[in-house]
Amino acid sequence: MEEAAVYTVRGRVAPRLTVEQKIRQAKRLLNVCPELVDAYQVALRRWSGDPALRLLGLPIVTEGHRSAEEQDKLYARGRSAPGPIVTYKRGGESKHNSLPSRALDVAFLLADGSVVWSGVLLSKFARLMKAADVRVRWGGDWPGFKDRPHFEV
Ligand SMILES: [Zn+2]
Image (cartoon, rainbow, N blue to C red; front, side):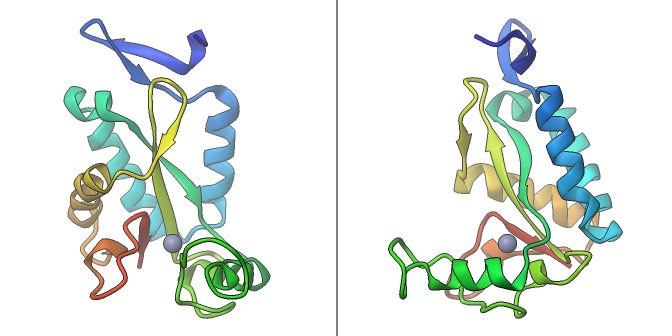
């Protein structure tokens, strides 16, 4: 077990970012618009300040800005490329494609170092994001295709 990756809450192990992961998180947020970064940081502080939530997993940003080329590659998935459909937006159509990005995607780091996209955790985190800023829209609230890791303003 990596000592830097964990800390304990009342004797139980909770996930924690390594220094490298912290730097990567900060870099991803550099290309995200300030209002969304603020909402994320408020929500993250509330999540981390709640010992029960903290034990479930630690929210991490998996993506902020995404180039139009990267978006087209994602769009191809489940269509001309293998895998499930992950987006209905072509390059330039997603809020991830603006610079700074008006969208970010969230996942959860677990104490064992794995990363999960749990719908239950994402909906809990979505409540904190929407409470932090009413302008935040959650992909899990969209009609039809649910994009639960996705938040945008
Ligand atoms: Zn997204």
